[in-house]
Image (cartoon, rainbow, N blue to C red; front, side, top):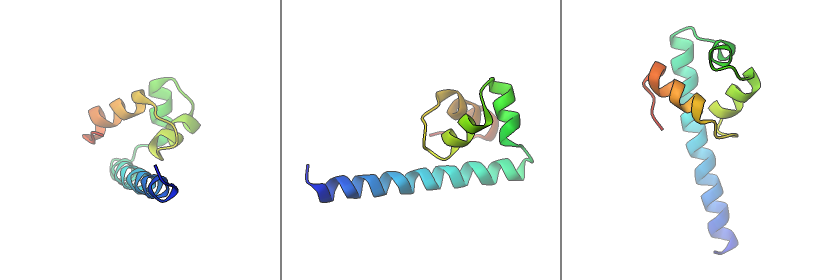
Amino acid sequence: MSMKTQKMKKENNQQSNLNKSTLIKVALITRNIKQRQIAKELGITPQAVNRAINGLSPIKRVDDWCERNLGIAF
């Protein structure tokens, strides 16, 4: 795999994470839900929820929560 291809793949992944995080953040604001409420419900830190929402750490519990409560599946 060439360097150019790897760079393009990374850029596409970053764009995908941005789209995902934007959808989740808008849904949370609309429903007046705080990330700390999600963290408390799931028994994890607010920082972990933030990293999951921003696509920096894959946390299945947060993705499952978003699917159940916000109707956003990834």
